[in-house]
Image: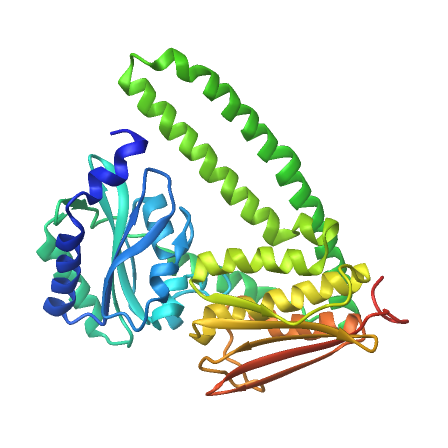
Length: 400
């Protein structure tokens, strides 16, 4: 099966059939949400193409590289996943970045790899928006009824990934040694992190990525010699696709660590580039508004403003449930004004539920303090507004 025709082979004439399969599963087992995700070709990103019980269309816009999100992890590992109580079983410091969980407010799910001709090509996700002791039995009954097959796919139904054990070990390790940082220590940590992020990002881009590109060019020189060997050509296409996928992952990781645009082009292009990644990952539209009188600012201001806005946008995409996030950037009278607004579910600003690393809000406040800025967070059931007001000239006590 060549990489170029994999999509057609899987989907040709099957769209209506797969849609009915998903609807039937939801009705038969009373799941709140069922989705089938498929890849366009081996090693390509996964998209949730067919669904039943969705609250809106956001999940269709989610694009998951192998190893990312429920679908991406499932297809990369080739193993099933099951959590009957996400809040209790998934360590929020490590395993909260599952876009579909936040898009559909899922609290319990089972995901199984879908296989064609011996290759994992997708995933079936069955989920509830509630927590119940009965869910595990429902998943087990669903798996037993499948008998290893769904539609024209084989289904992997054993050797589940044991994230719960890994999460518990991490909780125990972190609880044993958890230093409390004062403001000055946090400031030094943030500065050291930025320097290290910049170094690692440069090494990924200029080192590993360039070596992979070199290997890719060598592979392309082999192509003319494989014209009469179908199996060799198949392996060639798969190797090429794997290299392209790895290069994309390296690029995204490099941008997340320290985007080169932040150093070379400035705060706004870097933030727009990161927002584009968030849009693809979480299916949330990010709209930029306002005007700035200049393209570049003080380097310390650019770094901290970028990180604060990046965190605010990420939180809105992951937790708010809003379809659109609005980012407004303006400068006037010597001050930069940046706001990130969503019309989602909101949260308790004084006692927020810890999600992700649990350090996002305090880290944002500390970054604002470093540049002499004020940071306000207002949230209610009608949405959240994060506002940064920072001096364009970083004074004494600010980071230079």
